[in-house]
Length: 148
Ligand code: GTP
Ligand code: MG
Image (cartoon, rainbow, N blue to C red; front, side, top):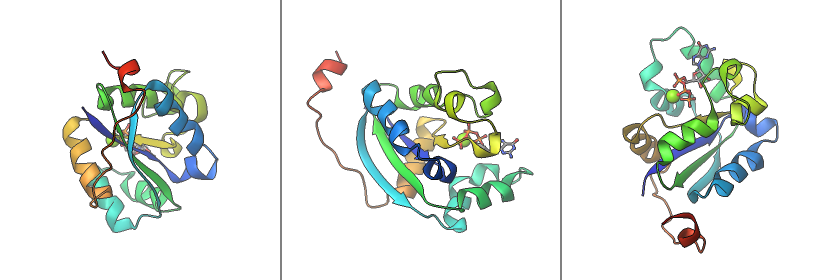
């Protein structure tokens, strides 16, 4: 099954939105296979956002992401990468549809409370970066009621 890397950013943690974000992925039917709270170093975050290193907002992005702990997670299920992005909503919360996480809880692009992998390739890289120890493979009792 497909896997995606989902992260509650420092503003999401400080605003008490961890449970809400986890609940949405759980209720949708995805399976949680890795989870931890981590106060990431700038070096680690620079690797995570390496593709954006030439953007003008990059230094601010790294500072924001290093400003407090994040909740790192891996979720597994049908079309997890694309569906995860749809659940997060557009990058700029001003354009995020109501009903999405950003569309319901955020206003500013530089404080958009959550991250989701943008492709299966990125997901594999991000999961290896954040969970070098690996993920937990298990079977959920609900699987046969979620998948055909
Ligand atoms: P992530 O899930 O965090 O990777 O967001 P994304 O894939 O929707 O967007 P992208 O990877 O292009 O940008 C990463 C993050 O950088 C965004 O989530 C924003 O927090 C931030 N960002 C992107 N564009 C801008 C911008 O124009 N200004 C500012 N201040 N931040 C931006
Ligand atoms: Mg991105």
